[in-house]
Image (tube, rainbow, N blue to C red):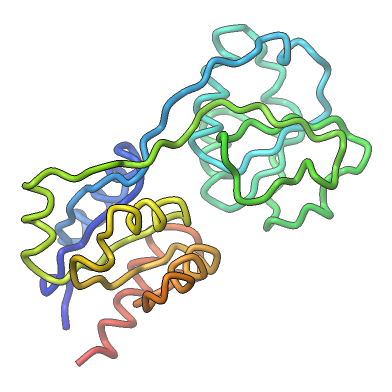
Length: 233
């Protein structure tokens, strides 16, 4: 089997799909953008930014970008010098590109958080793991919410029916949005997961995982797919 035997479908946000689509296009791989999640920025209480903070937690590239826009508007650029715990290499990279200069890359191990530090956590309205449950000094600042796509156009469904789908999932949220549109049952699906957490979400729906990346990025997803394609008759 080869890439052209499939409809390669990307399910991130519009912006996320643009980034992945460009990478795939540079490799000669055509893809279809079907965002399962839409980013809606939230108003924040700016008095939160006036409080003294010892560190930041970043678990989302979207959260970093939106939070940075807020602090830029308010002139609170000292945040960029605070110790910033980044979960995952992609989050780290985005924070670095936006000028945060005291970054700590950790692999979802909250034991690395300083117990007594007062930490601000810009995040979405729904997060998979609540670090603030065990750490009373961690405060969540909701800067955006993700809203599921509720329906697909007739054109989108025609595209999906043309060939088997090789569907790239970057989060459990996108997996469940896909399920809620009944797309797993409507079309032949081969799911590609960005990591083990997303793969586990797919597996709970009794959907086989075609490939799982060993690093949370599009490059590793492509490598995983090519390995699986090589083993597919």
